[in-house]
Image (cartoon, rainbow, N blue to C red; front, side):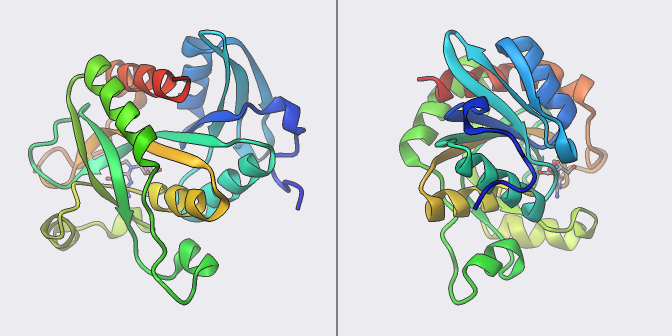
Length: 238
Ligand code: GMP
């Protein structure tokens, strides 16, 4: 099937794509990290920029918020020839030691059955784990460039405003260190379609620390996102 939303030709997308939720972050990455960036898609707000990072062709693409939106973008990028996708995102901490700006390399993602992944695999629990080699490279780069990096599993939520104190206790007791909304879909689709993936998340809020529950804006997170982004671009071109 041809892409129905990102209606561009395969030549316009690189094989390596940094995927992000926020169009403002995509613009920031394209302007600060890509050489000769070109905005090749604007439809549906799924902005795609293609350029070069230190001479290697890389795209930056917006996947929006949540599994259903993200699945469309990951599927269409794959149809267009993308074979490695690293998510650079934000997440809420579920354990008190995560400070705002810290980075988490997601070693796996839990999710509620049903939903987007359940529509693909209704009869079983689909694995949602990244490529271990790419994850190791990403972790090493993040440690070197960002410094404060944790490795651990995240929960990919489908309901931002359903996250209360009970939610934090339930998931942290299960060993989950942070919450976001798209990694499980990315990892499950990577397994099913056969592309390489990993994810680096900057902590934008912490649900386990009173007073830190509110999302920090892009500007406040920028120095941390910049370092995380550098690690992602280094990993995706290594
Ligand atoms: O603001 C929601 C967006 O940011 C989603 O794309 C999530 O991946 C991410 N995010 C950052 N912090 C949180 C959080 O505390 N909860 C959830 N559900 N998503 C978060």
